[in-house]
Amino acid sequence: MSYPVQAPKRRQRGAVLVVSLLILVLLTLATLTAIQASTVQERLAGNSRSLDLALQAAEAALREAEGRLESTVLPPADGTAGWYHYELAPAPDWSNPSSWSGNSRLGYALDADDGWAVAAAPEFALEEMAPLPDPGGSLEAGGALPDDVVYRVSARGYGATTNTFVILQTTYRR
Image 1 (cartoon, rainbow, N blue to C red):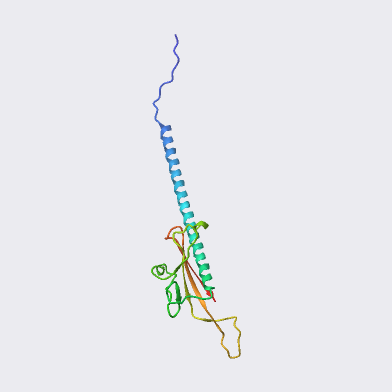
Image 2 (image 1 turned 135 degrees about the vertical axis):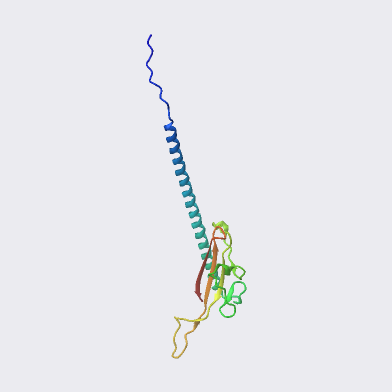
């Protein structure tokens, strides 16, 4: 009777297990890094969208204010209801965000059905500036140029949160 020849038994050291675990750890770290990077990209995209929404809301408020300036009868510029005058009721520095709280300004309601998802309605204020000579006025011999009334329009629009806002200013000659 012959017995098959068996190879001598070697002691296994588990090197494949250790290498497999190291590869698994590296893949896990790579996956976590990719998830973190995509989360940051998603936040950036969301913040960019919110800022764009705030800019569009502020632009809409500016256009609304200009439309009100085209009206034939304007309310008194006495510092109430968002109307200011350079001498009688000077406006605060609207470029400073803290000026918007507690001061008189006008709101402009945006229609949510049109896709506006802003945190708050945009606001605007109008300030009558010092009269300026009309550059297109006719000159008479020895006569002065007629004055134009110029308004500064300030608007603040909000994005998806009240922490995201844009302040715009423009001038309007009437």
